[in-house]
Length: 109
View 1 (cartoon, one colour):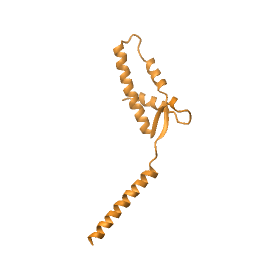
View 2 (cartoon, one colour; view 1 turned 90 degrees about the vertical axis):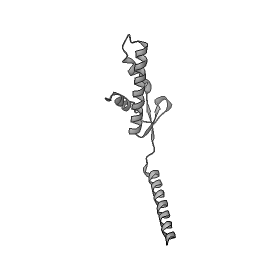
View 3 (cartoon, rainbow, N blue to C red; view 1 turned 180 degrees about the vertical axis):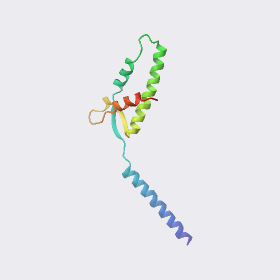
């Protein structure tokens, strides 16, 4: 009698695992490929530098921007379930999410 219970539990566990794996395989959407144009985003940031800024201030502002840009790209990649590449790396066919990254950069923190 105890052996039957163990077999039933074992079969139920295997069935549950199989169902979960099938669900992930069929229901999970694989990430898509998208691109951004980081050159444009960085050029826009460089235009915002004040004339006469010291090198230390420029470096600090650049590091802060790099961190914000990294966060923005990560947020957009997660939001769109996408692997983001730089636009020159893709010849054709990937959606451009540069505008979405720009929006994410400009959102209040």
